[in-house]
Image (cartoon, rainbow, N blue to C red; front, side, top):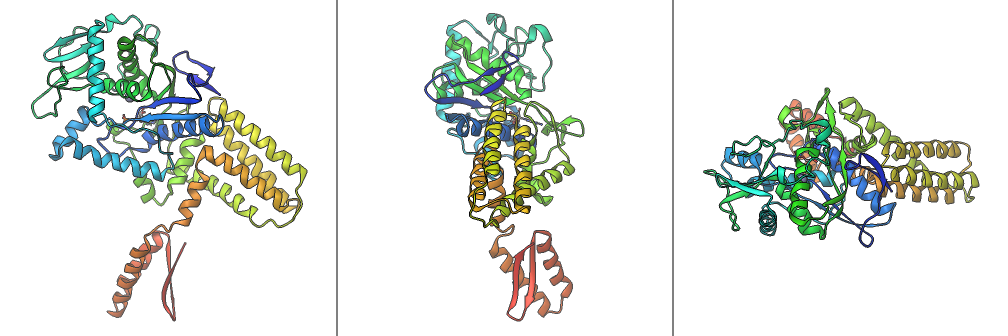
Length: 470
Ligand code: AMP
Ligand code: ZN
């Protein structure tokens, strides 16, 4: 496996450092809102990375993906609606789990929340270690990391060369700092905010501290193998995570840093603060299936920006349909003979697919391998040059591709599930019949049209009304 490492700005060979287990940390969602499809571009790409490590490299994976459930935005959101922080953030944790399942993300081993007791304790311990090592100072009840105490600061973002760019998330708090670049580890409590102590004084953790502490607590001895997130996290978030973790432990924090480029819409990063976001529900409400979205999000290389539009989503849907149709066509093959040309094409396809995925996760080249094979298989079926053993081998190979891509089986599962709950359909059929008995045919037609727009067709017959999928 070769992976581009942001730390070295190079592709490097990747193997886990301990046993056969890749220990990886993925920065998760800040739960002040339902995650948008830009967030999910990062999560889907990292899911494909996880699946590649498991199903092509045959390693075990211990992945931690956190929920940031305490920071300025979550606190503000909870205050606005008058809920306690935990209740407020829980609804978005649940929404994330729903969307993640709809997009076929493999469940990861650990999904800690920052405000879990054990994590807060780990954060406090990290601050104590930093204090002992002389990396902190206190001011107005808050504790800061002194960047001047850590000469390696800037090694990830290459600040010496590029200068400090004011990233979207440079701390914009108004606490007193000795140096503008210093960042807060523990924020003194403000009136009305949730507060903890753990021997640090009343306050709450800073965002960067959360990830360092959870990674070290759950993944064991540093360096961990891999730390990942969207590209906007390189600075300051990941730079600060390095300073905290290495300042506390004296050991490198992560061997590899992997960053996913942004999902773009109308030439801008999709982001909540710009207000140009769609979430998975919006996509479904527009009549698209989550599988089409997953296909789109993984279809281009993770280090290239990806433009979102409804047209590109439509094209993704059509491409996915071509693949699924080709698989269905294999079921029509009957001949008993295997054909060496097909055996050979399949073997070559498998090698190529595994190679391109291991070359820094080249998913677009991986999909090209699938489409090349589909052409070969379709023309063999047209020419009567395929037998049942070939079809079986092709299905098995596509099963392997899909363990990595996770998109064909997702589409098949969606197909097996009606788009509307059958109980709701029955209820609407009854309502429609009642409307027709009142001779309110307009109301009856509205119900039929509504179901049709949701993919359900009603058929009236002598035995009553039956439904089927569009
Ligand atoms: P947040 O909830 O803001 O902490 O973001 C969660 C994850 O989504 C982080 O890894 C971000 O880098 C990533 N992310 C945010 N916006 C985008 C985007 N437009 N495209 C890709 N990834 C994004
Ligand atoms: Zn993080």
